[in-house]
Amino acid sequence: MTHAFIESEERQELRKAVASLAAKYGRDYFVAQARSGGKTTDLWLDIGRHGYLGINIAEEYGGGGGGIGDIAAVCEELAAQGCPLLLMVVSPAICGTIIGRYGTPEQKQRWLPGLADGTGTMAFAITEPDAGTNSHNITTTARRDGDGWVLNGRKIWISGIDEAPNVLVVARTEDSRTGRLKPCLFVVPTDAPGFEANPIPMEIVSPEKQFQVFIDDVRLPDDALVGEEDGGLVQLFAGLNPERIMAAAFSLGLARFALEKATAYAKQRTVFQAPIGSHQAIAHPLAQSHIEIELARLMNQKAAALCDAGDDLAAGEAANMAKYAAAEAACAAVDRAVQTHGGNGISQEYGMAGLLVATRAGRIAPVSREMILNFVAMHSLGLPKSY
Image 1 (tube, rainbow, N blue to C red):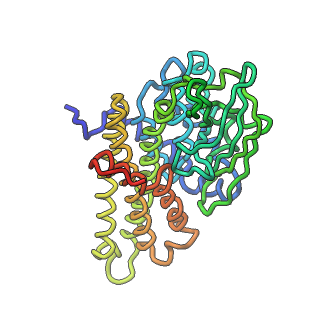
Image 2: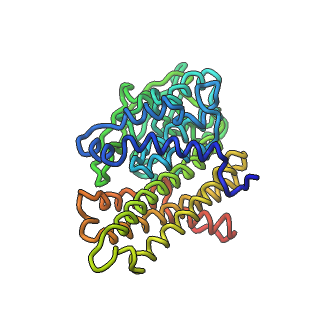
Image 3: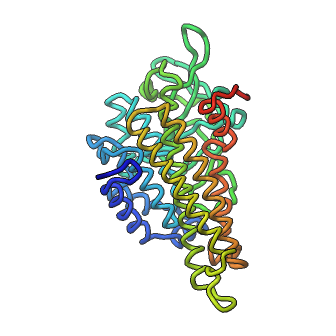
């Protein structure tokens, strides 16, 4: 008998298979690529070849026909082996979900197979320098021009522009009836004339870069628009629950990676008579992290199950909670892992210190912990809106 809080055998098998594939690469590979300016393309394509990258994409487009819970499991297991791939969150999960749900048959045929096998990676651009968390303030605009579109605007904190041939851009178009601007989604080639991207120097040790993007009179064909022109926020939000579930999985994988390293170190490092793990000052914080990680994983499974069942409202609450809990658990786990390692915790050799910045990002992106607390206060508790 299977229970809602135990993953199916298929899911557990998937986790094992992904972990074993990712272990062939491991943290050393990831860090070496990051420090040398290399990419993780071979790992990405390997995951794609094995069918793990498009596991949430419909089978008719080369995917596995699974749900968001499956792709989240892939993301988590990669991170748990020291290879956290941010593009997993963006390409198959956000873009794959939005196109799979709202794209025309032609658009699905055109984009989904590449998202599934990794050859057609797609970035996602929503955040703007002056809008930040407030997606209602987006100023990137799209206007009709002849039988196509012209886009203008700026985006910031956009991952993987140097690795993706296309980016799904959130812009706004004018409603002919009301004259008000409403959000719309466009697939933009990253080599389009007028599209420029500058890397943002980061402290995170990762081969995946972040970019500031400038969009100046970028011309697009009519079918660059994904979904209905009047679909508005509903279409955009279809990608946001998967985004939060994936962000949680990303944090959970990193937390597990750090905890495993800290536990192994605490078992063999002996300073006095016994390994340091026999001291409760070391053992208890690690045990606490294990509890926090398991609790967050359980909430993420709930969020994925609700999302896959099509209950967007309940999934929104659970996905926000899971993302919040996973980021907190990851920050705590890495902090404790660094402390467990003592001086070695801040050396390059042991690779713990770099994770402090990587996990800290989870409290900020893709939505800040403060905005999640706002969401829970307002929607779960019914408190008045504060902003």
